Image (cartoon, rainbow, N blue to C red; front, side, top):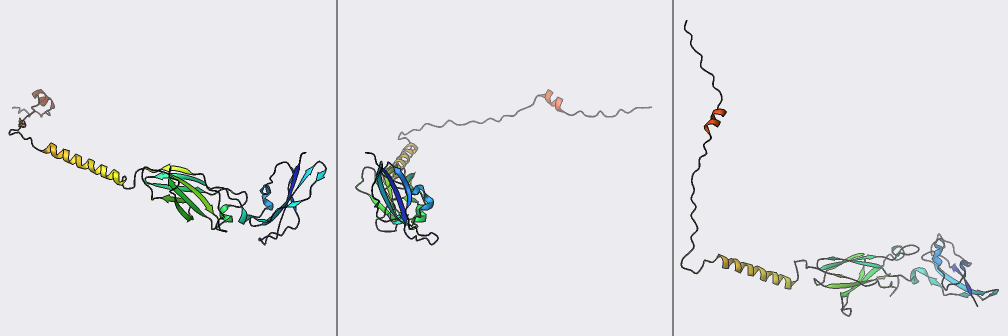
Amino acid sequence: MVYVWTVQWYQEASADPLRSSVSSYRASCVNISTLECDFTRIPQSIYQFGKYTGRVRAQSGTETSAWVESNNITLDRETFITSPNVSLLSNAAAIEVIIQDPVFRISSLRALYSSATYNITYWQDGQRQKTKNMSNILQNRVVLSDLEPWTRYCVQVQISTGRRPNHLSQPSTAVCESTTIGSLGGSRGDVCRHGDGRVALVVIAVDLMKRPNSSWYIAIAEEIFHQVIIIPDSSVLEAERPLEAEPPHNTQT
């Protein structure tokens, strides 16, 4: 026997003064074979702060069941919130957490839950039992700075609506990222190793500058300087010398 279902809903008196109350049921899904019906397919009829009741009946051929009503639901209090999207950006020995709110069919998270905050959980990869937590975070970009350099960390984020206790979103998928060098050029161990290297270089330099223990020294060759004079060729001088005017000849009469 094949069944199909018809789903209807109605809205109680609206909290929005611009919306009138709905006293009669409206059809949402008619003769469907699936076991779910999405009311948000008709968003112009759905109010995010509204209170709704649904009803459903089954039909097989010419036979139809009685209507069965659902419990009353209030959308902003009972909405199932999917997980936020989380990405990480490594910056030296810190990791920046970037959070994106889930997309709603109608309205938006911030319009519906203006006081929503984030709960951030993070831990070293492989040490899930040693988590650290940050709660009631308002910003969607947060820097985790109390981290070890050259270490891989994993982060998970959950949204708290603040509307009622434990009204939380689904937790995000854990994402992981590694820190790199510390903000001061490395961890304490790295600084010590670098310091040892500098000391070793100084000692080597001092050793190279010490005089040999021998009683005689290799003398540095004395530099001898000879003065050099460049004399140009006389033909060149003659060629470059300007012509002189001949003196006038005295004529006796």
